[in-house]
Amino acid sequence: METTAFIPIDLLCRQHGIEVSFFSSLQEYGLIETVTVNETQCIGITQLPEAEKLVRLHEELGINLEGIDVVRNLLERIHEMQNEILALKNRLRLYEMDSSEGMR
Image: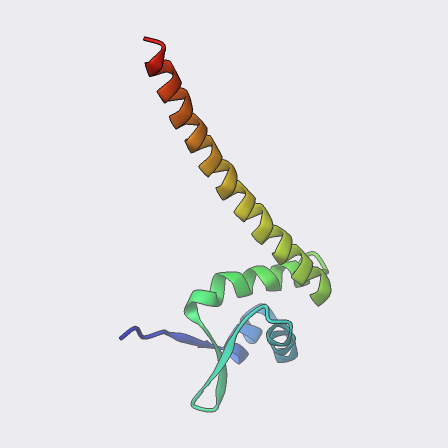
């Protein structure tokens, strides 16, 4: 059975100097998932990099929640497209190898 470590949201807020309501808003937008552990709102440790990226977008770049949602969706689409391009390049490479072998 897999166990997940959790980080209290209030600890993250103190470390980053932001309000707890920001994480509540992120959860409402579906950008992070929170869980209650011993009556404390937490996020899974696996979500920490994503949560910190969202905090940086908000705090350092001044992007509001709607903008963060758009940026995150665009970054996901870019990542998917990069994977698709890589797969197409690999298929093309195989096709080129088959063609060059047939010419011999």
